[in-house]
Image (cartoon, rainbow, N blue to C red; front, side):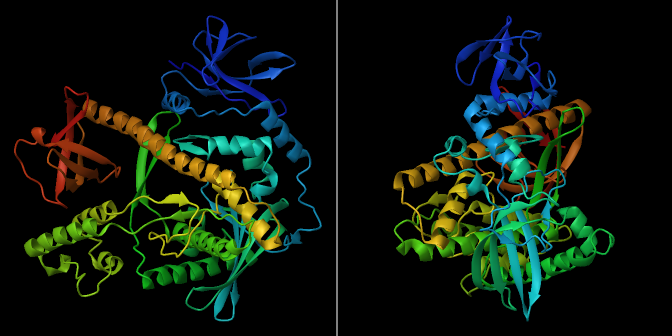
Length: 552
């Protein structure tokens, strides 16, 4: 059992190992070796130790207290082989870059006078992207700056080898295991405000419809003017916080709204499905207990997403066009369309709903109506919105997963002929690799390494799968805590029937919007239709240690 976790905060010393102290000896579960421990610590304590002048000892503030949700999350990460500690070689390379970040190289285009800004979550520290939007005739000029991670994580370095081994950063509620040392990902690589930073800038021209007509790639030096957050920018654009942004920054935000709306309309015109998902956030409160809350993403998040998607599609297009060069090795994110048999079954379900509830629910697929147009026309307000959300869930279930591949293929989900991942280079090894490939393509120089490309693809796909596993298990921990509290209090929660199988009924609660299962043997023969409102309460656990929820 984890009783205490310490996290190193002293960056000048290389972090050594994550260890558990048992009977005075530090046992390293990640590297399967034992090391002596110098210092006072209670048996069973988990800590991040450091080697300082030959003696390993704990440094820093406690990260997790006994019996807290955070301690459970640290155990979850360790059990899946994640290492929050970096090797001496990696830390030395990171330290060397902090001492000489080389943001003043004369080969970099100097764009420091331009009013770039970052827009992210309030607590984000690894700022991958900065944006600048300007009017250009009837269209816009969008400059999208991405942190120059490939420069600081060159192939052949200890940093690159370790990032390849990790594959990505891994996110858990209130905690994350980074792919790169925080001195880089939150320091000299991050596009922090009012400091010089290296960036790979996508310089894109958009016409009046929001379509991209040209893209240039520039390796530049920028200086972000402000670190903004989604909610703050939304309040500004809604007129509720007029002093939030002024001058050039305010103009950038107004142009962002214009481009975002045009890109959303451009996607709709191409029949890209817009799913109106309620985002469920799992967090930790001040007592390090799980909390769940949810809501729809605001418009500013959607605008930022549109620029990220455009950047990734344009980068993939440039690399595909450069495939004739022997050194260019693109990696694409490929998302096939839903299999026809799934779509046909879904359409049959909608016909049955329409026969029972009216023709407004019928998908006129044979008449040429797209799924995007069908979902957009459904009632999203009022009591009928429950059935709309349930139908949307069934539509989502027809989709298959996307994967990283070396061969080009369309991305159905975003409506792009080719798509790649450039916009998160500090959090994904595939981003580091693709930035390097794009720079080599622009320069016309480089070497081909097919074995490395295959390793990147494998690591990228495995990291996606591992993040899904971690998210599911962390969500289960949070849901267990929620249902345990509900059982103790006798709380009743309202939800919507989202689907069913022979033995289960799936319900999404109104608040928080999480999915729970009701087993038919506990329903007393009662039948529920898709989109029905239902009140549920927790009555205990069954003989298989599963939560039992019954209609209230």
